[in-house]
Amino acid sequence: MPQEKVDLPSKTLIAPAILDDLPQLIQLLMELFEMEGDFEPDSDKQEEGLKLILEHPHRGRILVIRNESKIIGMVNMLFTISTAEGGLVLLLEDFIIHPMNRGQGYGKKLLTAVKEFAQQKDFKRITLLTDKISEESQNFFSKEGFQFSKMIPMRLHFS
Image (cartoon, rainbow, N blue to C red):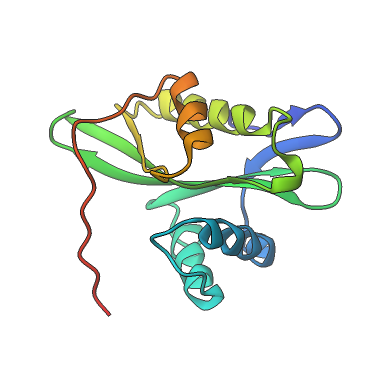
C-alpha cells in the first residue's frame, strides 16, 4: 500500500481503515461469513476481532475501498514470521468486495495495494485461505499470481 491514499475512478480510494469504520466493516464481514461454510456471522465477535487489529497496528492492517458514500470492500492483512522464509509474511484474510460492486475491478485494485504494501515493507510471502467451494475467488487469486499450496489448513477451536 502506498504511504498515501490511492485514487480510483469514480471518486473511489483505498486507505487504511479507522475505528469509525467499524459498523461498515462489521456489515461486510457479516456478508462474508454468511457465504463461508466454516464460520458463523456474529457481529460482537467481528467487532472484537477488528478492534484487535485497528487498535494494535503492529499486528496487521485493514485496507478499505471507499466511494463517496460508503466502504465497498475490505481486506485484513495480519503480520507473522516465517522461519521457512526467514522473515515477515502476510496472512491475508477477510477479502471482500460488496456484491453490488463486484466485477468492476475493485478487487484487483485492492489486491494491488496489498502487494505494494508487502513489497514496500519487505514481506517475503502472502498467504491466504479461500473457500474451497468458491471457484470464482480461486480463479481471481490464481489470475493474480497466487498458487495452490501442497499444505492443507487444519484448525483447533477453543470455546
